[in-house]
Image (cartoon, rainbow, N blue to C red; front, side, top):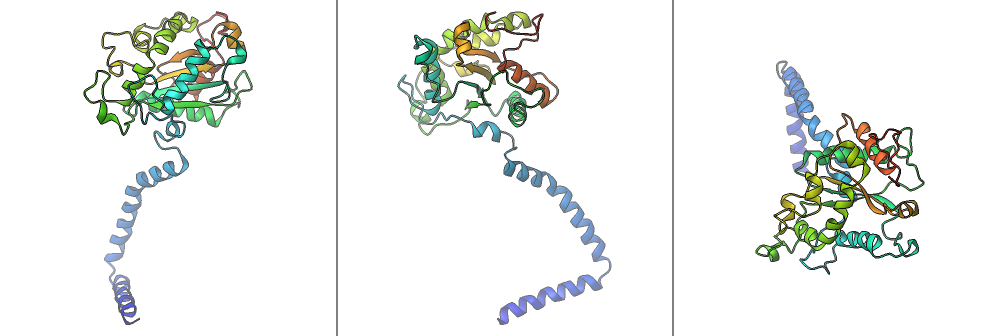
Length: 286
């Protein structure tokens, strides 16, 4: 108790000295103002982190991990599992009744991204905007499916990376993932190159070729794999009947000046709308 009284008396003396020393008061006020100003960025970052709006937080919430990725087709990471379902639905199902819709849903975006790519931040902002305003005003889906997104983080480190430092397929988990699923990218890429959107937009072949994993550095596909890659996976019966089932759309950049404009591009992608067609309707039959 005596110690507490001594501490209290010490602070009382300091407070009395501040009140009686006129020149100290304005210095303290100015110091407090600068402290608040310099704290704003940290307060903003904390608020964004708390609300889920910090950079990378939205994509992280929907991430399918590469943890445990091996260099064998039997690899069973979270990223492997969704990719296997996509492949089996696209190339294994002989009728729509055999399609697996229970695990990941009927329709969703799949995004490959890297934190070091500024375009990924633009894409994340657009997806956050789309999710927040899904089915509102200009961001209305043409079907009743809910907004759905899964992400795969190309820069993710796996606890077993050291085991593969000297192997042909490289040390990164994402490199092993791409090699394990090369057949999917080999088969999907050419069909995307023939999509009406690519032809009408007059897009260059470079990203499509890299996406196919057919370049010379085929044992190190992460060297050229385009990031971010934004895919639309459509497992609806309409897509099945139209012959554009599964991975049906791809974009690598969003060029709008605002998150809302970029979100509009994403909803057009979902609705298979093509701004380059004369009637502005990208029908699945095209």
